[in-house]
Image (cartoon, rainbow, N blue to C red; front, side, top):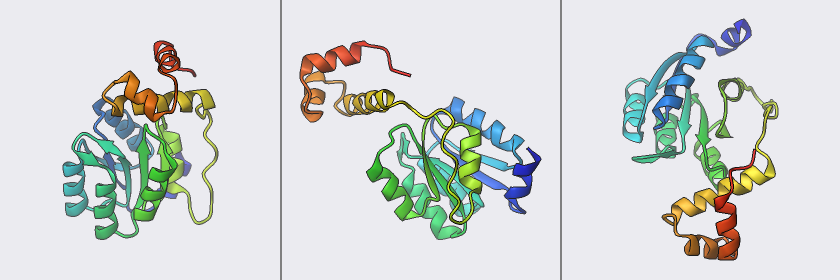
Length: 183
């Protein structure tokens, strides 16, 4: 833990933006133990307000929030504090979203579930250092299942529409939805 403290530097301010209150509290506690001065926001509006008033040295933003897109907070942070190291978190990992996040100015992009260690490594990685691979990456079956669930939710839980968008037979989709999520 002392190694993490040394790597943080003088300015230890960290903004966490996520609308999952339980996750936000757990992550805030874990990051405080790692030496960060944590401030939390549960919405895009609150995140933008904090980013404008007190731009932090580090930030972790969830991509999808109830009142909008976490990339809006990233843009404000980039404008107010260009040296801010920003990690974008999301439960819906997609290449297009990762590219958009990095183009706007995010330092890194992590899929949930990401733990405090993964997030700390991503925040503190320097130069061309690549963060280490995740200790427990999602299996290909799990990634597929997550994608199907996301499309299903975006289609307002309409099985026929989801099957059409995924180019999948409706009965096959129903079988997949009836099963538990893979590990």
